[in-house]
Image: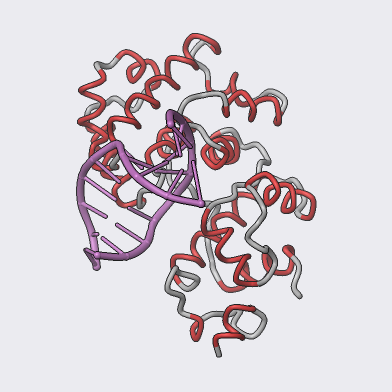
Length: 218
DNA sequence: GTCCCGACGT
DNA sequence: ACGTCTGGAC
């Protein structure tokens, strides 16, 4: 049975990726983290392009923008009413509680900051960790449905673990280095888009010889 | 019709 | 555990 670390090395040999999350600022990462919830990235990019076009990709502007206008700008990313409300609430929170500075919010004690994020509407564990890791450059491992699927199929997860169980498992084994966590999550997402899909392409997969799912399917 | 870098209320 | 929120690409 391979270890989490061995899987990382193997993925790193197969995919050539930079450390990822396409965004031009920490705030844009945070916005993307809200918008991409259960939504494919292509649609998120449309919404981000609308915001940029409107020169509204700014925390203070989003905080004060009429909700109906924000809804229309982010509409392509789906769930637009929920997301507009939650995103605006987040912006107002950062303005009111942290002087409008994401840095101020994200550079405190890691677990404490994470708990603070989790109290906000629309920020669950994955969104919190994405914001911490890619906007805050903090070593908080991101667990998503891809992570569960890939490591479940490999046989390294049983399917009964909750989010924090999996995060703790990865963080206990993988050195707490920001570029490493960013790269690992990027590799998992890429691998799951290209091979370990819902409907998997095991015959083209680098892990077919060691993966429970692939070996028992064969 | 299915899937997408989820979260929340019940 | 399950329904809901929503749009767009395939």
